[in-house]
Length: 86
Figure 1 (cartoon, rainbow, N blue to C red):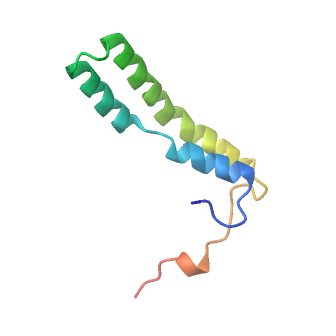
Figure 2: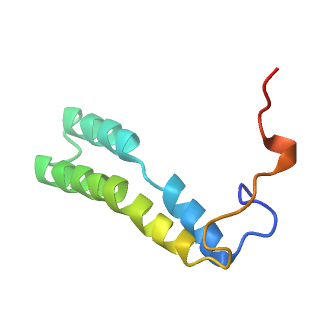
C-alpha cells in the first residue's frame, strides 16, 4: 500500500481521494465512445462533468480528512526519504 506506516484510517481515505481523480482517462474513453457511436453525447457530457467534479472536490475533501487526522495532517519528514543537497 502507498500509505506510510502508522497512517490512520483518515490518512488512508485522504490518499484514496487524492489518487481517485481521473479526468484524462474519462475524456479519452468518452471520446472513443462517441467516435464509435457506443455512447450518446449526453452520457459523455455527464461522465466528463462527474470527472470534473472529482478533480475539484476530491482534493478538498481529502485535505479536510487530513486535518481531522490524529496528527492534524502534520507529520515530521521521513529522514530516509528527504532529498539532500549535494
